[in-house]
View (cartoon, rainbow, N blue to C red):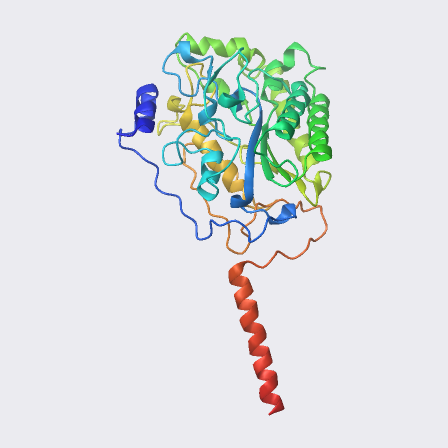
Length: 396
């Protein structure tokens, strides 16, 4: 048995996988980088990504994701985080970073280790996963500044030339805290701090693609319950969602605020405001309508949730990773949305006709034609030779 699998089986028996389990190999027809480093954000392939990073809250720090008891909840399992975990390989843990490593094994920034909530993690543990458990959206500009400074000074990274992929998921703690300070956690403030952060990135970081992931509809998380001490923790960190009684005015208001967060984020990002030659922000909407995973009897499948009955286990993180990857290779207006995590997501390959991460917003004007790949070059050359030959025949 591999050391990777022993680790997962020992610390996460809830995965209910045999010790010999491996994910099937994920192979695509074209897994090569571009013939030359692309200069346009519209023609970046998965294998062109040199650097990966993530900002956010406890869902990105992967708090408790591999804990076997309540005592493990404060542990941040960053190395299995859906958007940037770098533990093992794709066959053992599916994360966005581990998928991209299939295309570029030299990917820089994937989180290699664990940290503990409340304690400063070193970059040797976090990688470029600079998310902070408990952070609200007003903390995002600070995280962004930390990331920019880290990338600028990191040895082995070419800040100007390397293509960077950043994933941001932020806002759910604002919903959890909304009733405590409706002004601070207002929709306007949510959009303001998102905007400030994205403008910082656009003004200072070249060659970057930013995935902004749409926040979850959170009401159904009230159903994630077990009669355990761990589940009581829900009330401490998301009281505004958990404590209101069903159909109460307080709960209705919170549901409306949650929906307004989604709508305003769409209004901000379904535009060309954050789009230029070497930079793009893309809203990835796969979580917009997501319902918690359920068993055949309709009850919540608790193997997707940690002992605090709120955060995702590795099983949940893997589904998030697959949803994000798929969205990256689907155009705006044609991106898949998860209806329920009960149905495992199947990974897609980058389309052969457009093997690039989709970055051009529908609001932008038509862009330049894609560069010819090696196969296309040979086809074009053959076509030109044919035309020359036909012309010669006419002259004879």
